[in-house]
Image 1 (cartoon, one colour):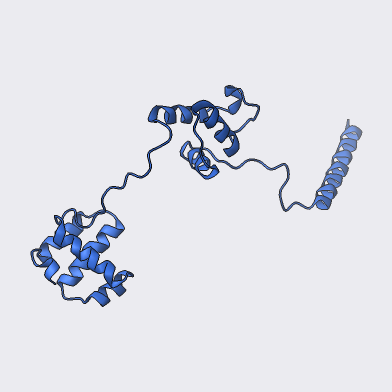
Image 2 (cartoon, helix red, strand yellow):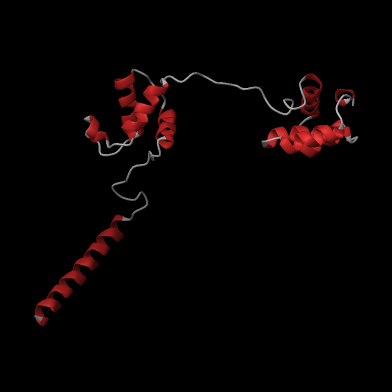
Length: 178
């Protein structure tokens, strides 16, 4: 328990109350369990991780201030290919139909969005990223199908004949009543 010698159980309980997020809370609970005498294998089983992970979690409490120990460092990721202004402008474009920007399509699709971004901003994205952009803009990348993929053409024709018969009969009846 040497890793937690300078930390009291009360300190850990106070940090647990202030901790946001599932994984940081798990780390504090593992430290509380260890401070209460639980073994590393038991903590690993309880938290669904390997013993090495428990040791790494406990090392955080020895090496960092107790308030920061449960949390991971910020990872900024890859910089955006579009500047903030360009991204805002793109989202404004997506709120209007593509026809207002000179395209022939009535609705945005991933391929049209990729083309628009390439032409307007000289930036290339993958289809998956285009779908994410559409979702962030509040749009769907699904389009209407001309017919349902499971539709039975014979049943559709039979339905059309039935509707036409009923419509023709109703028209004759209306003429007779007049």
